[in-house]
Image (cartoon, rainbow, N blue to C red):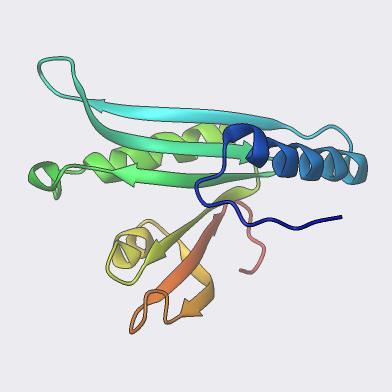
Amino acid sequence: MDIRLKLNPLGRDVAVVRNGLRAYNQQQTGSIKRQEIALLLYDDADQAVGGLTATAVLDWLFIEWLHVPAELRGQGHGRDLMAKAEAFAEEQGLIGIWLDTFSFQARPFYEKLGFVVFGTLQDHPVGGARYFMQKRFDSAST
């Protein structure tokens, strides 16, 4: 066997790892429910200018990306996108939503929406932090 470092690996190289782990996970958990979604924010010219992408895996929705252009922030678009994601997750019977955000991003925004930190990676980036946050729909402690 040989180990090789590949910078900017090809899709097929990544797929070997991803598909192998997914197959193992499915053996352990049974059928894995997985659904990718996008909620897009359109301007008056019907152009997508921002939005949210997420993946429902097993029992949780993971918010991967949330972007609202700077000139549109503070107008409730981010809150509305998150509310629609939450409605989707609840309709699917999921336990809750989780996400991560950096110290220079939007932790206070997510806290206003009811998210709590369940993990912190200090010095990522150096001098900052990366926060892992969740919002459960049940009354279980966080």
